[in-house]
Each structure stands twice: as structure tokens, then as C-alpha cells.
Length: 378
Image 1 (spheres, one colour):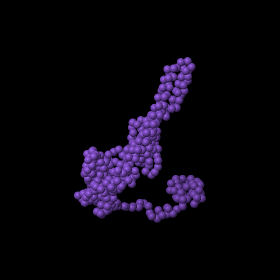
Image 2 (image 1 turned 30 degrees about the vertical axis):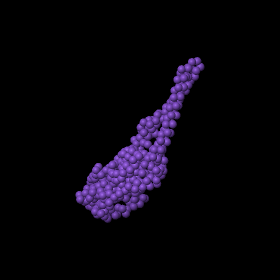
Image 3 (image 1 turned 90 degrees about the vertical axis):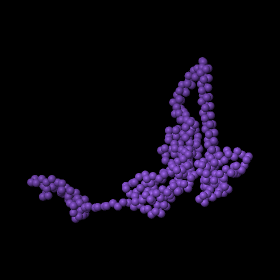
Image 4 (image 1 turned 120 degrees about the horizontal axis):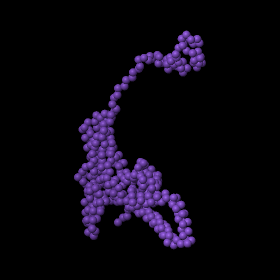
């Protein structure tokens, strides 16, 4: 027996299992039938073979596929190692939480017993002392009301709600980032961000938040949108769908091919078709598996589109430029070549009201003071 103390040991275990028990399948590819592992267990009569084989099957083949490839065995070995390590951290945090709970309960019991003793023996001078202490406690009760409420809320969140464990990948509504639970204490929880940051949330804040746990679901649905041009034929769409299902069926440990499907989601602006490839994934997204699975599907569909020669181009739109008939090109050019002072004087001449026959008016029908003002400007 060899202990698994690091990720390298887990990877070597996956390679060793595949190299020792692999054989050729009907397609000529190396794989490990789960029955081979059953023969290995049955060869040792000193152990309960049936129970041991069921335990191995539940760990290495939880989806009852019956065929295991090399990468799958490596991933399962790594999963065993990481879950054991995270379980050790979770037990450590649980001991800390129980110790905090024990301290808090002991303090409450001590305070209650002290109050009962004072009530029972409240005679003479001791009675006056109790009255004084009661007044002091009543005054401090307003001060400690909020901290006490926070502590009680944290207890309810950690021990009753318990929405996550150590190592779970979660998303807190209002924060789009995926966070990995690193440590759980009574008053706060420490998260590890994917970019290396350490984020700390108070538990009483998490109590009122919506938390999405990405580890606890046993399966997930992935949506992979893709755009194709409007002139894509039905035969080409069928070819894209066949390529997608060929990829899904080639990875039975990752996808449930019977539930996957392709949907024409929308036709946008009558020039492009929006296809959505729905994948039902057999595992959770704890280790961000959806990222590389989506990348593989997009690369596959892109390569198939390139092979078919599909190209997208925007629809042709007629463009017509009309110039107003009442504006002459010479007038427009003269207008933009005038100085600001000349433009202002022309505006006043067009909108002025003449006072014919009155003295003091210029021949143009405007007041002399306005004429001299614009003459100074020009």
C-alpha cells in the first residue's frame, strides 16, 4: 500500500491504474472496463469482494458508464486526494467552531447561575447590591444588544443553514466572482479568489445573502451559443448538430448524450441564426470544468464551420444622399466662409423690423446704433 500525500502521487496512481488494467475497446482505443477492476477484487478471497467492488465502482465510475479512459482515472485520483485534504481542513474548522460554541455556552450558563444565586440570597446589603447590579446590566443591555444579535445570527448560519463547506466553490449574489471557501469560523468566512486575493465576509452578512454552491449539484447544464449566417442550409445545420453529438458521445463520463440537444434560439435582424448547444454535464462545476468543456465545444464547432466554408457578411443596405433644393452650393460655401461678425450682421438684417419714414434710421431700415455696433465687430 502506498499513501497519497501529494498531487503527483495522485496522478501516478491514475496512470498506474490505466496501464495495469487497460484494453482495446470496439473502436480500437485503450480504455479500462470496470469489469477488469472487478476481477482484480474477486482475485482476493480474504476481503468482501462484492462490497469492495461496489465501493470502487462508486468512486471511479459513479455514472455507470463502464468504460474509463486515462484522463478520467487521473481526475478521479486527484478528486480522492483533494477531498481527503479538504475533509481534514473542514474537521479542523469544526473543532474551532465547537470550541467557540462551548466557550459561549459556558459564559451564558455562568451568568445565569450567578443571577439565580443573587436572587435566592437577596437579603439586607446583598439586596441593595443586586438592585445596583441589575441597573448596571440594564444599562449595558442596550450596548450589547447588537453584538449579541450578530453572534446568534452567526450561530444559526454556521450550524443550521450551513450553505457550504471548506473547499466549496460558491457565488454570492451581488458579487459575480467565483469564490473558494478556505476557512469557516464563528464570526466570518475566508474565501480564496481565483486571482489570488483573500476575501473575508462576516457571517451575519452572508446570512441575508443568496449563495450559489457549485459543488453540491450532481449535474449541471451548460449553454454554448454560436452565430451562423442566414444563408446556412438545413443540411449544414444537421452537420453541425451531428458533429456536436459525436463529441458528446465520445465523452460519456462528462456528458449525458441523451439529454443534450441543439436549439435554434433566434434569428437576429434576418441576417444571422443564433444556435445554442445545450450540454447536460454529469459532474458539478467545482473545479471550473465548464470552462475547458465549453472551449472544446466552441473550437470543434468553429473548425466544422470553417470546413463548410460558411462566412458571415452584413446585409447590403442602400445609402442615398440628397442635398436640399433651396440651398445653392455657392450660398452654402459663402455662408461658411463668412466671419462671425458678418454672420451676426446678416442675421440681424434678415430679422429686423424697418421703421420707414422715421428720422434717425439708416437707409437699410435698421437703427444706427446697431449698425455701428456690428461695424465695430467686423
